[in-house]
Length: 513
Image (tube, rainbow, N blue to C red; front, side, top):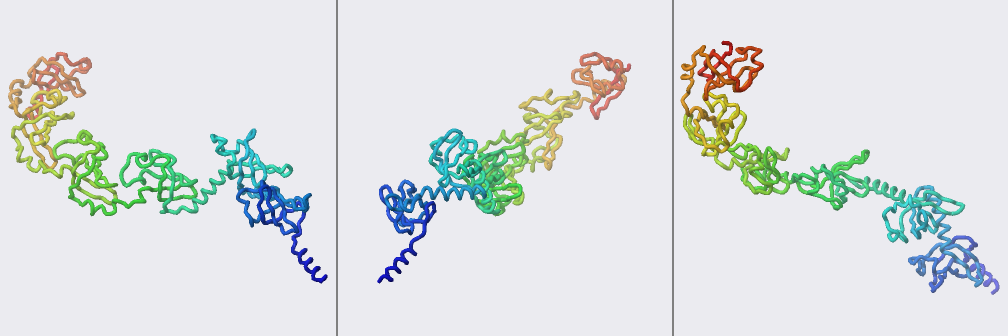
């Protein structure tokens, strides 16, 4: 019997864990009371721990935690344990390790003090200087009693104190996010991002630590004038990775690539000769862009707007938003260009221009505009002809067409030539009057001396008025050099006829009498 008791006592003693004061050991919560917690650490009796030393989520019967043995037997004859001191002791060991390898630690800001904040970090009180806090512009309410990641920048073993940096932790977190993103992203992959900046050439998208460029040409299959037409700062968008260069840190993104390319089967949609309506979306000096479908535009070149009118400024005829009917002239899938025409929808009036306006016939028209060398006349069929300055007067040198004609003036003219292929009609004003030059040649034979008035002075001579409807040229070689320097319009000069050219309609004079 005695032997059996001794054996049982031996087995009991062997089952009891050997613990020492100051030791950290594992214990299991066996009972929760109002102010204390009973913990089984495998010793003869259960240990007691003040309930205030536990986090709320730790208070669970059966939960195993680490405890510091403060006393194997206190005044009440029980083991005194501490959860806080165990955590603090283990926390310090971790802090030493994390400070050496640079691992970030979790900490809870408990109080604002002069020059910074106090932080509970693994049971150790740390100090976060304002200069390392990265909390500029943040209220105390937003950070007190909140948890953040920190980097341990300094450890004082003697005082068991640490200095923390939130700023460096954020940078490390950012670097880690970048590294992770670079490993995740693949060309052709779809990724979410936030628009953070917009420029004239595109938008910069934050993909979670790495910025990518969404170029304006990759935003929409349709032509756009500015990126702000598609995205705004702060927009969350899904983009496709088009290209990436880890070495330079550049990523090219696309938005339109997520949608089918509308040009893929363009030849089937818009075959040559098709009549189609579209909306004017842009007007430029050389033509009008028309939206035919979502992402597809065509150009009506100025030369394809009218058979008869010279279009110098398309904005005078069109406005953005106008609906126009056009005809497809050409489709270039590779260049993404569609050529359109308005005039092809009408019959070409130049086809019967030679029949309608035979050479030598007299027609009427209205002066539509001018150039330095002539005046344009709108005929009754909307065709346009031109009176060259040389065909405005038999006898006067016309320097400016506006000196003879006015815009809007109705005139009678003679058809001199019709070139349907080049769409040109030459008209004459002087041809309606008899050619006076045979009579002029008789009236002013060679060596006739005249009293003339200077009209203009040029490098090659001086133009003078012989009578109201007749001018002549005193050649520069026929003027005394000293006298030539003083000649000005309005001066009276005596001259002699030395040449009469009835074919060229010119009189040559000399002042050397």
